[in-house]
Length: 218
Image (cartoon, rainbow, N blue to C red; front, side, top):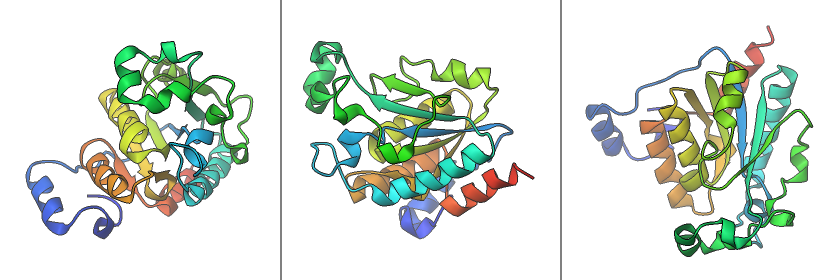
């Protein structure tokens, strides 16, 4: 069932899921795009309420960005931001109180400058975990004739999982480079990476993803 199986669940879990019909491989389509989910201040600064140490994740994403840009693979970034806490929504703001501080114009919602987003690379401001919810991501992907999304960023248990599920629901091939996603909790990361690999995406080693993308230049 995908990458470094020893790191994603135990053998009994993998056997149980295989026998239940989970964990098939979707593989690559013909036209990939790279999604960089929520690598902004609130998540990448360990001093923030939501933050954690994502330096190794960022390094992996930078490798993917270099290859994507060199091979003309479309790149999309996301962040979560609201004009005021009132925009969050009553139920959501009570469940996820951290979102009340995610205000447009604050450093919390600004991308890590090391990503060096280019003008032609869209930044989608999303109100929920999925990059597809209440954004124009799907229509923009269709305009590029994209059939495969490489999903990176954070957090594995929230926005990565939700984005993978939505992409899969829209019949896109979904690839997750394991080293390019992260979470503030190692157990949540591992459990959700297992589920993503079983249900929505092919979780693959970073090097395999890089090799595939580099091969497009030949």
